[in-house]
Image 1 (cartoon, helix red, strand yellow):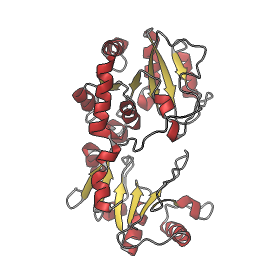
Image 2 (image 1 turned 60 degrees about the horizontal axis):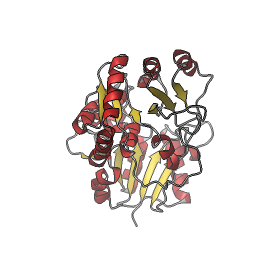
Image 3 (image 1 turned 90 degrees about the vertical axis):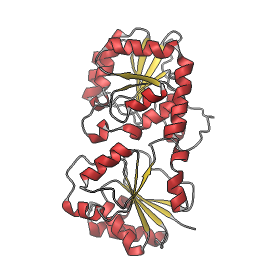
Image 4 (image 1 turned 30 degrees about the vertical axis):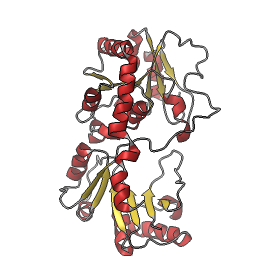
Length: 348
């Protein structure tokens, strides 16, 4: 049996555990001395060896998959040491200057897994590297399993039992609540849209003492609702299924946000659950929405007239946009279909 060994870092959210015995995930921070950094070669190797002593050492043809920049050079050297295969998985595009020695090692990476072509181009530019000689796999940030829809947890709308949603269009921004995704602009815009409510739902508990959250509540005390629920990944359908329209706007603060493309997890979830979307105009992103007619592209996020028209257009032919949303998911974001070349080549 071949093994897939994933080197990841803790994110502050619940760690993911794979059900298959031949897929292992290593959080190296758990194996280094307290106060020592896994970003240093000797501590990384000590951590790796401590982990492999408890499990088993990599073998030839096993695959080591490294997530992003932090431990990439060390996991790459580890793969070379054990003659294992290696793939660089890019979830985030580097926004800081990369040291020359990391750029040098990156030239020898032969396999990259990333969401789309534009993000690949940005990644290679960051490392001063061409794609010549590299095997590229494109896999979008999306759902790769079927949900068990039996749950006793409260859905997104049920928590607001004091509000009658009967004649309201429920628009939601699910995910981070930050200026980088226009949360403050959306709060202001929706004060002028009486036909709809706007729900912000984060994947962690919302901190009401946060100055930005307080600012949002001061901007909009009419139809802005902040979700007090937190869902496990297996229950996120409770956030997406009750809404009418999903909002997925991003500021071009850097390539990581501006080239969001198929890296937007919220977009793929909206589409999976057949929710029409409203997005802003970004290269490699809004073209997908226009191609499949699964929502509306806003050119000026600050213009409430555009938002009103977009919402009205979607609701005037909701089934059309809803079915197109799922068609877009199946063609562009279906994880199981898009990941086939990677798993075929690596026998997992």
